[in-house]
Amino acid sequence: MTEPSKVIHIRNVGHEISENDLLQLVQPFGPVNKLVMLRAKNQALIQMHDLPSAVNVLQYYTNVQPSVRGRNVYIQFSSHQELTTADQNSQGRKGDQDSQPNRILLVTIHHMLYPITVEVLHQVFSPHGFVEKIVTFQKSAGFQALIQYQSRQSAVQARSTLQGRNIYDGCCQLDIQFSNLNELQVNYNNERSRDFTNPSLPTEQRGRSSQTGYGDAGGLYTLQPGARVTFAQMSNAAAIAAAFGGGLPPGISGTNDRCTILVTNLNPDKIDEDKLFNLFSIYGNIVRIKLLRNKPDHALVQMGDGFQAELAVHFLKGAMLFGKRIEVNFSKYPNITPAPDTHEYAGSSLNRFNNNAVKNYRYCCAPTKMIHVSALPQDITEDEIVTHLEEHGTIVNSKLFEVNGKKQALVLFENEEQAAEALVCKHASTIDRSVIRISFSQLQNI
Image (tube, rainbow, N blue to C red; front, top):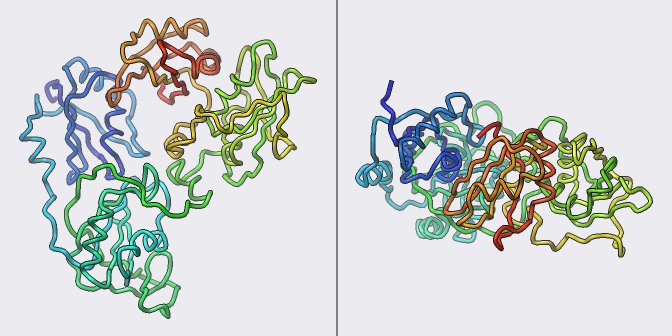
């Protein structure tokens, strides 16, 4: 057995997994000093601040299988006791030798949360010159495409401008190299391949695909965060597929177009519009909320779109809140008519899906015993967090940690109802002038 070390070795790190994904696995257990991605080997090395932190990581993941972006990763102590600068530089440069400039580009899409077609790639790359041919295929490195320009100058310009950028906010990152091929062969014009110089090619693809034989051509690049390449948004169906890595949770169709929800069996003595906002905003942006004065235990909640409404109905139906098992169903009304007794939230900065919606969709779940608290003051203590939340139930455990220099916490309550009460009452509350954010965590334990 490998001797305990501050350095943790992680295997099966796919190209869709980022450094930040790995940091989120281990940072709840202590600060991270160094991280080295071994892309050529699908591995990574992480040096924790001290040995006890590394031991805690290994002990926890001995009983819990760590999974990142749907992929199981495997954690063990490294044979290294320390990561040196030389280690980082030598590992980071493996495979970085660049091919000679060529009019054909090899493009790898990392973090591909939206489906990418020939049409999408053509929209991205055609502003930099005439694109003659595009071939897409799936390889061990992930989804890839070969893009042939009319001139080498256009290919050089496209690579210089687009390398490391995202096609969509927070996903579909472009890793571009020069191919060593001289000419692409395209047999079919369809969503996977296209010859823009020969529109008469057939669309049917029989037998072996035209992509066969196009393999990985060149090393891998360490990408830097980049800006979005702007063009029309994907369809709602694509966004839905993106939200859950291509497959929806059981029971969710993704086709609902009703945006307004009827919530019944509420506790009228303890509920109000803001508390309902705090709960339902986990699943989408809130347009407006109305408590029904003639039925004090009823409320209407209008979500941003039908998919968000379907998520809320699916995950909150039968949840316990303030001693009541609430019922959540689609309303017969398409929307809530603005009125003096209606609370408007469409322009609220507290709506959680204004930015990075794809990431927020991935965190949607039914109420759990564990809540995640973020946007905390930098000098806060664990005791202060517990004091702020303990009126809502028995706190079994808590953990204060730091991610990218920002303080966050996990707080485990005795049951889901207590955690839900803490969330609806304390989300967007203030601690030392910081407006904190609370969501349910899918972790089972701290």
